[in-house]
Length: 295
Image (cartoon, rainbow, N blue to C red; front, side, top):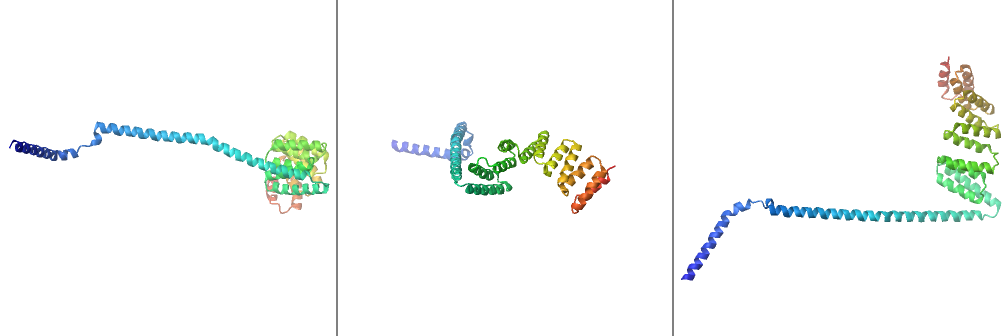
């Protein structure tokens, strides 16, 4: 009997506890566990750990990238150097083959072919190809004047004025300072670099060696005009016209220098000559108007 009473009380107590839980269940549902201090602390730790891992991973990636960059650069440099060595070996073999050309006719023909190809490359502004071809020619004949002249033009085309000047100065030694064209080329370089007095000196040297070349006189006249030495410019242009009487470019220069010097009569004379030799010149009307406006 006592055991029955104890069992009854235990069942009753359990039922009461279950009733209390169901009664409180709606309130328990409304509790936001995320707001509990323990939960917040745990989540904060997780966020810190996650961020730390992410930063560690990124740092590791950056370090690997930094370490691998020199390797990639070294590999690139290695292959570039290897390629350049192969190209150099190819050129050396080709040039040694040129050097072995036995007969002078064969050597001369090969040089002429190389110069023709170099001129074509130069006209197309393929300067590196032109330079290679000319160096091939010089490997056959290291004193070939025309090859050096063309090589200087290649350097001028690339605006490598120091190399061009050095090449031309070496040519002067080969030609014993007797080649007017070399002095003219040196004058052109000096003019392009803004050294007008040096250009004047070199053009005068070219004229002293070749007094029948109107281009040297016209170039000198242009330098004098840039130097604002107008009388000298006019005189040099007149000498150019004597050598090439019907040259429209010289007549155009003479008209313009006459206008600058306010010489209406002289400008008119040269304009009439320009009309005779080049009546289709589109500048004639414009020049005529400028001359009419002179006092």
